[in-house]
Length: 366
Ligand code: SAH
Image 1 (spheres, rainbow, N blue to C red):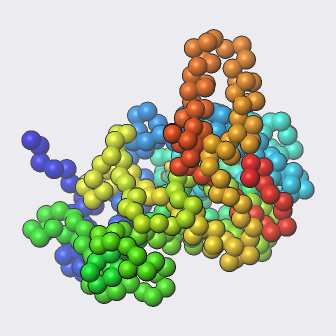
Image 2: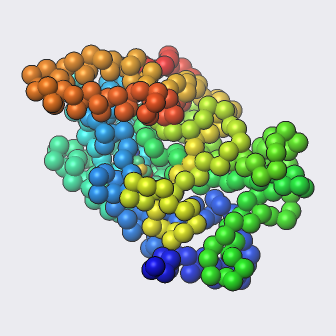
Image 3: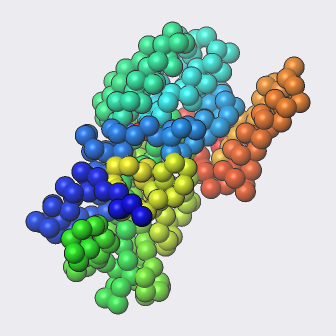
């Protein structure tokens, strides 16, 4: 048997933990994914058949095309501004944006008005996005964070972005909830979960401990809620605009450990070889919605991805795509759509939610 794989990042985290004590899961996640030198985004080719995982736009072009139609309708709802920021958070390989722009050709004014900003942490993925958009003759700007997006009307999309944001976990112990931390195994040779000795802050947003059995895990997504609040605050202060968030997760917060690592299309131990595997967790839609509403924005959904795509015209789009194709090609188109929309596949666990300037009507698909 080969020795277990370790990474430089793991060695560094172990040294840090030895010197200063355990770190929060949020800090671990942020480092494992985002460390500028050794993090997952800096070192791995994450997406597609050769990567670690597959996403909706990688499965079928129908996904991005329907999002494109949703965005065009939002632009119309906004009064067809002559210039607006079209922003994508975490565009991956740029596949969805390419499909969005192709579908948006039905409204040349939309394409003329769109100023494209892509918020992307990975240098490799920025490069792929640039290549794909250049082939379409489209210019874009890249930014590190949502707060860097230029002023002006806003249409934002984020598919499978919020699930990458760091979460915290709390474990029900005999003393009540205690934050779950990343520490070291007794021999100091590997990372291991531990719990904080002090109780969590009173405003951590935890349910009554007595309602849950020993060992139960409760997750909080402060980073996701904070980003939802930032987006909402901008949509309120500088209308009109909308944000469409699509991700896997829960409508209401509940107990359960949803943190998962994925590598080569298979599950991977969360604390092993940090930086080599993707890490994601369920998105707490309710937490984002509450933050957005508190900031004064309108919130629509979440609705299941299957329903959302159907309402945007999935059936008609499939008919169009299948026209003139061979039976085998038609079957492939339908298989892709089934994966996106069927409740037994991605249709139910993935959800869509919109944050809107309060003056706008309900968006298409909601
Ligand atoms: N939306 C794409 C990719 C999803 S994977 C798709 O559906 O195929 C997550 C994407 O978010 C990747 O592009 C990743 O590099 C990016 N990302 C994750 N966390 C980020 C952060 N904090 N800042 C900027 N980009 C981030």
